[in-house]
Image 1 (tube, rainbow, N blue to C red):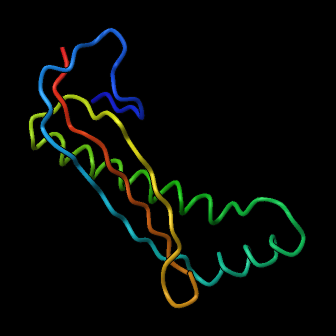
Image 2 (cartoon, rainbow, N blue to C red; image 1 turned 135 degrees about the vertical axis):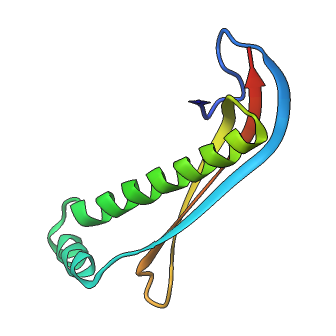
Length: 106
């Protein structure tokens, strides 16, 4: 399935708009990731543990979005939009929300 943040797929014609599709994933981050991120916050640098969790959440949300679009009969999703938030009492959970428009292209 073609997925793009643009409203069109170059060289293809959208023949049917099937509707907006969304996927939301909330994943927890364990205490070890929090400790590692805390250290990185003090000394600087990237937090590999958070980046890994974020990538995992994005992959899960994209799979869910594609599954929903496929059930509608789509062969592409256009206008993808990604939103990321921290949730939970101490911001220890990551929420990834993705939306787009399921379409049929030729």
